[in-house]
Image 1 (cartoon, rainbow, N blue to C red):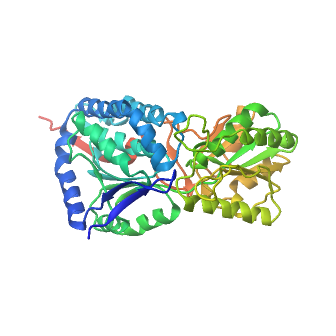
Image 2 (cartoon, rainbow, N blue to C red):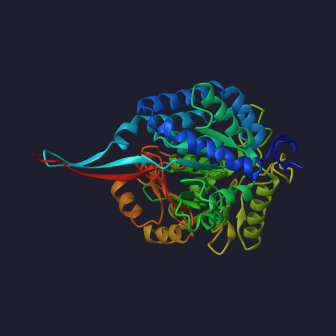
Image 3 (cartoon, one colour):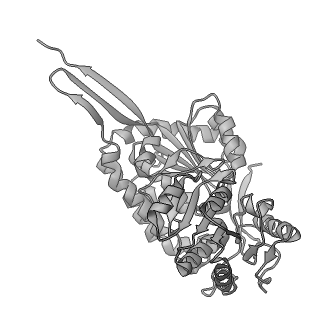
Length: 460
């Protein structure tokens, strides 16, 4: 019997979509078609590839009304936020705009005696394993530059957002990207791992859990396949004594709670200078108490269900454990909290780093807030984590932020903003957050390989 992948909607627990998984043979055939198609795709002029990719992006934008509703049903995000096309388009557009310069040869010498240069060459077949929390934006981070650079792409999306890859592939095919150059596939973990073990791919990009990332590394061991891994996070915010308090509260609370806290670079712990701590907590609690938890298709809803009851239960466990060990929970249970996927957002104080909620990834609408005496104490706490994706610093002093940022073990340092991916900068992390880097010129470098040319001209 063919195995089916099922998207269980967090709205009501129903099966919203299901698709049959490919057999191992059919999956291998799909990758073989991608490999056969890649050389012709790479031989096309760069501008032609850029134009086709951006036409595909625009076609996705034309589908946005349908997509917003589908996302609500698949992973619970309220329709009032309008989907992801803004960020989807911003990232693809930036990568298109820098493609010519990012992929241009580096000429070391060119004279009557020698021509020496380094060119960028597409890897071949790129495997993109995308997550459900921002399913369009995270996928396009790699899909757009990989295709523009001349690779073919095989996209496997998370089961929770089963329809996303299918819709992306449809949009790109409708505008003329060859079907074998960009394929959406439905695979189980065993088949995916088997393809990686067999070196069917030339580069694998994965966004997801540490455990799954470790499995991918093990599958790729000995194949020398390039990997880009964005894994867990426990991103801190630090509010210094000279910060704009209202701006810090508004941004950091939103960064902790938006998308029901299911953001790769969402804020999961906040350290506030002791002189501002009480006011920060008071303002934060007022904001969260004003949220409307409910059905994501209702316009009044500001926070929807988590993507699954299992994820919500993990957050409830962290909250309960913290409270049992002395933490103070400031938000009373919302009437709409059903004990399942619909979860009350929570602010905790009197927390410390012995508690799971301050150490383990929550990926839900909860944040712990601690007072600190100075930058050194904040630095020690920010670095007391096995993860390192982003850190958000709040101060009027850019030099102070940059100096402190140099000592933080993280991939990105923000000042006076948070929970944002700048496509002009490398998206990267350290420690158990993973390795590699996406977007920016570095994203192109990771999706291609350098080839050197040392050409000695013949003299008469």
